[in-house]
Image 1: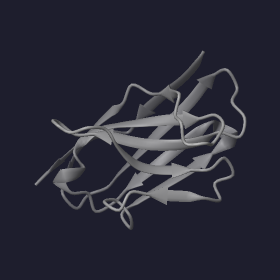
Image 2: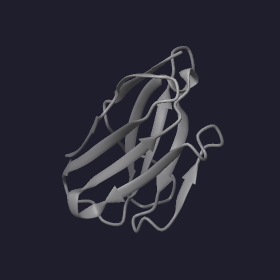
Image 3: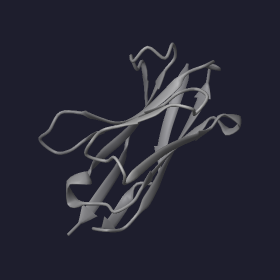
Image 4: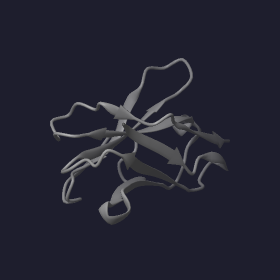
Length: 119
C-alpha cells in the first residue's frame, strides 16, 4: 500500500549536478527514516545516504560524502538527493527506500531512476 517513486535522473557530464526526488504515497507512515541506494552495472546494491524522520541525522557513504546531500520535506512526503561533482562511477540506478521503524531495515522501495554520468 506504500508507494515510492523516484524522479530526477538523467544524463549529465562529469562534474555536473542532479537532484533526485522521491515521493511517498499510500498508507501514511510515521517517524520513518529514508535512504538512498544505488546499483551500478555488474555491482551489488550499495548504500548512499540516509536521513532520520526529523532530518536531524544524516549519514553518507564515504564514496559520496562531501558531494551528495540528502534532505526531506515531510509536509510534502518527499526526500531529495542533491548530487554535485558527479563522477562516472556514480552511474547507477538510484533507489529511495523507507525504514518505518528507523532501525535500519528498508521494507519499501521505489522502482529506481537512472543516473548516467559521462566522462
